[in-house]
Length: 550
Image (cartoon, rainbow, N blue to C red):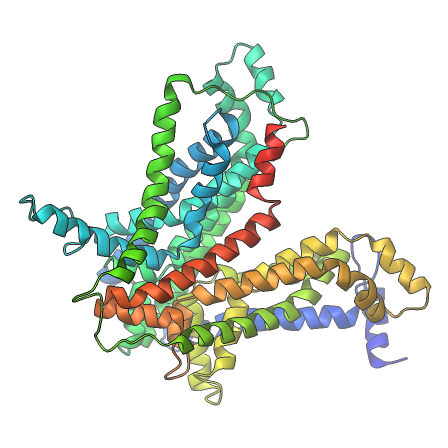
């Protein structure tokens, strides 16, 4: 009996490694998954160690400063405003495209989801170019004697831009809930003399609340962790303050602000879990959809509402990017920021490495969580999601502390940058892989085992070919998301290693708009591919729309 066999026998007799179905957990796979979970959680350790070096008295003094309190208030206000605005946009748009006779529903469904393809910092860059004090709109109005327009900078600008590019999270999750909801329940309420509005409030809304909460959580976490948009809009929040402090040798303050940002993130996740785990059963369905609500006189306002959102969130930023390609003059050319195609290759190279490593790490964790359900496997699975909830700026600073203090050999190297991507985006690979494993009949693997196959051989010959589409989809999502990651890339890239996002950031800071056109359009194209994968993973919005019409 090998050492591994002895260990497996011990934990089985102790009851620690027993799944819900009574099967003992495979020790080798469990230890491998535990090692991956520890690696994912390790960056947070360096933040805690750095903050601990500051001392309690100094920490309290730094956190109690008025500027620190202002940053907290600004961040919470921005998250609240963007989340509320996204719900106010996303829920009505989802209802219009699912529950009503809105003309061209399928077109609006796709068009309203597409703003997700525009990275928010590129959207902010485009809005400043279009609506800033020296932007396209200001230049056009100057010809009519209008010398000034309301500023796009500050809280209102950051909230507007972020809302336009993150509301699709709420739109998509709410829409999925509505498509799974049994519309006959509403008709039953109508027979009890409830108006359509009353039926929606009392029947539909409680059922889709978890879907709304899930989308709101994504919006809140994105807003809290976003670095580019508040920076461009000159609104001081956690991410911007951390970056400034870190680059001006205020690293104690940066570490403490990072801890405070993590605490706010934890509060947001806790609040969402309380809202999402309500008493009502979510996604009640299976009964099909009844007739759609006629809009009547509201049809034209509904169309204008959809068109306005699509114009601001999609047509304006993409149109500005194409305008940059054709214009010349100050701010549109020159400045010593010549674009090189090598930047695109650098982005592709590190993103491919991240996708490959994340896939290798995701398969054992996802397989263990799907096949052996227990407290242990649930904890290991959830641990991989901590990095996704950790803002990129915090993760970047944690790895800078680690690399500069404990591992100078890997500091500012490609492997450390790839590790950051894996920590951030591993859940995307774990989620798609776990879903694929759950769809594979476990009896197929058992049949292979009865024919003399080892567990590893049964997995390679039977399970892996069947879950390959989910594994590939997860790898593609990691690749496409890593291409767009800004703060971690800025902090961890090797010296002289330019990528698409670092180049865009450099020309943005210098004000040379036109130089960002080509790489920005490349990133938008990459993001569009990620949207295609998202639609396929969710069964395709078009397919869902077609089914809901049957």
